Image 1 (tube, rainbow, N blue to C red):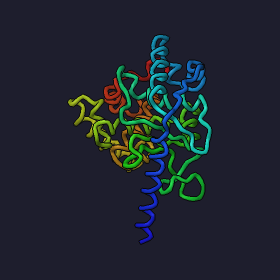
Image 2: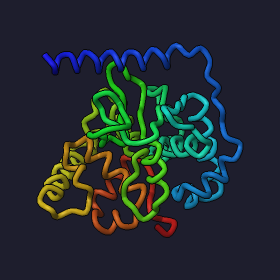
Image 3: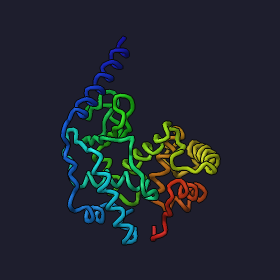
Length: 261
């Protein structure tokens, strides 16, 4: 009975959050004026781009911020946060000129990690750094603001929470979050991709891989974790996982590690 009551309360909370945000009649899609400077200071991926690519990246960031609403939950949304959310979204699809996130409308930024029972940022069991909403939270994403920033702060690390969640969103674009991004992946690469995912997960489970152990949870998490590694440390990923690296270059339609990383 307690479990049933908890589930009902959780569903009610989701609905309340959904309708509070949806009923806002006006939202000012404020685009920061200093996007190039913020990108240059905080986004290593952007700094590696050629001048014409930087201009294109800036335009993609502005475009994203023109149709996605970013809300702070018990925290202030600063210009840097907007640019980092947008960068997390643009980086995985930069190889696809016309990509738009039709399956996203709102991003909620939390002041800390949270739990998935009542989305509390206090107390125990607060292990979640980000999630893509489902059900009543459809077309929403929730991110921990500190985790979002940390993903871009330490350029030597392999993980990036923002990129991780947006890759889940890309995976979900074909209707199934299963680690097989059919919206991006050419059909001839589907079977090799599934094969390499399965092998890589086995290597993680047996301690023979430097890919984060969370990637062994399932195919969907492997895809997101491997993408973080691919975009944050392409140099290391290429050396340690050359076949996966080559396949992910095809999936994302991007060449990585060509500018010194």
